[in-house]
Length: 163
Ligand code: RP5
Image 1: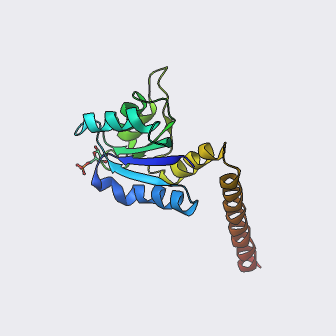
Image 2: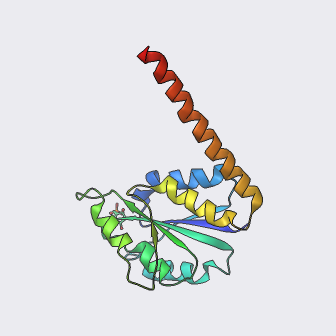
């Protein structure tokens, strides 16, 4: 199975990005985690992206805050799908990171999830890998069904309090 990379701009992003790592591991997807910054370690970030396909990756998740150029910088160096996670790590509540991540120029896509949307980034990466992996697709379907049943259970519980 293809690996998924979870890259973050700083160790201060790890608490949030751990949600992506945990979600990928629950789905039994091999994951590699790195701290590379578009600004502080630009060469390491570029080198990782340039070699990611030959190193067995199928998708890259990139989380960063503030002037969050990490996802775009990685996307510029690979044609693997890159999923950007704007992180709320500044006085602007993540709006700065959202705009920096989502407003890519034409010809250079980054699939951007919500501010702090690390779990959805992992699920989206899993769905990409599952295009060619029916076992993973079955695990994703099972997770969806479990989620559905949990919400319906909460609805039934709510109805009992309203009687
Ligand atoms: C960004 O700046 C990082 O992704 C992080 O979200 C933010 C703050 O980084 P630190 O100053 O905590 O290392 O590059």
